[in-house]
Image (cartoon, rainbow, N blue to C red):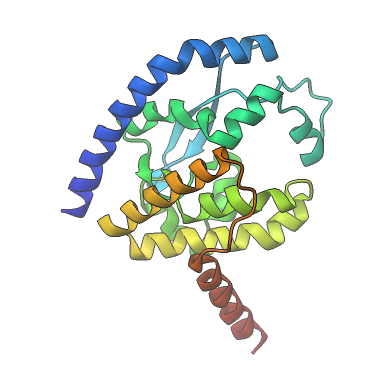
Length: 225
């Protein structure tokens, strides 16, 4: 029953989001076009449920890579001003309404990984994350949104501190997924985005962060023993 209700809700939300995309598209397209030459959309291959690849859509928020930029710092410098605004307000994610309608994504679920990273990150202990449909928002993506910027210029620091916590959060969602959990994440997403729009910059750590840290500590202790 949960899966049926979840899919029906996904279809309903995707249709609402498609209307929003249709209304806002001319303004977004103009902003991107004036900021940076190139396509309006960024399309990449992501890994979905049961490791199935799919085309993932976003509004483009970065200058086209000329092959000279290397590293995370250089990559961040490619983000143009309008793109930065879109990223902060999550407007760049709106085209994923197409993915939700097609069934590639759900509204709530683990964020899909790039094809080049999925097998490395979601292997072993985290393999169950790829047994569910990925989503637009999740505990982990919200944590990354509110706290990931602290490590954005240091990929090694991000991989050692933020990524393990995110993986634990995604696994925790898979184990506890329910209608109540999904609605809680959707409400939290709306509150956080609105808070950002009104200028809030610092957020407390969510309870899922502490659960993830405790589990990682338990695993580390087991390995040491």
